[in-house]
Image (cartoon, rainbow, N blue to C red):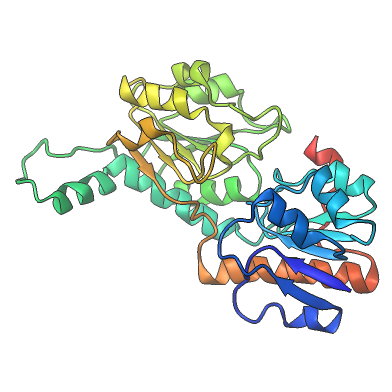
Length: 312
């Protein structure tokens, strides 16, 4: 059997694949172009992808009828056309649950950074500009008794809620399953809004100009979910005009590109998709993707399948 991996994976996680087939790893240390991806998957029985790889009908046609599994090395799967993969006779898988703590930790790091102006202070020190302590210098916002509104109360949202409670925050949430408060109430009453929802047709630009207008002038937005959940142009305008106090983003609409207006603002913290970026988490993600491939090719059943109605 032929197994194609779109980008090198960490550690020795590939070892189990050698027992079931011939493994080819892309030689490029970068996201593949669509043409390179189509060429790489040709004749494959299994493909291990990352969130940079868009697997659509064209890729499936290029792969051919032998393809049995597309194993995404990520919890999210908006890069996969799960319905098309299913119709092709293959199964799509992801790595749920693996990155909960790492992403929740980063969420709190970003929340603390933007509210206490840590990165802004770091930039000031590195600039060499003169500064001195005074009673009003680089004042931020405390978290105690402030409201955190969590949009998307899955495993990561719940983990963030636990951490926020330890900081003395009052936590409310909004969920597509109908639990918690309405989105408008959450936006208008929260001091910090943290996004943990999947990217779907309904959540694309969920935080747009109208949503930002509902937020408090002193509120902050944190996004460690998916970039297109936020309209970056609208966010940049809201930050520039002080409609909200600040934002912290780990994901972007057109990743790795960041809206240029955001780069000019001091009241936004920007990190390069570090939500799962611990050695332990990334290694475990890769291992789960490998387990899914081995399970499908040897037993016909993946460890963590994605059912395509969830992607509609």
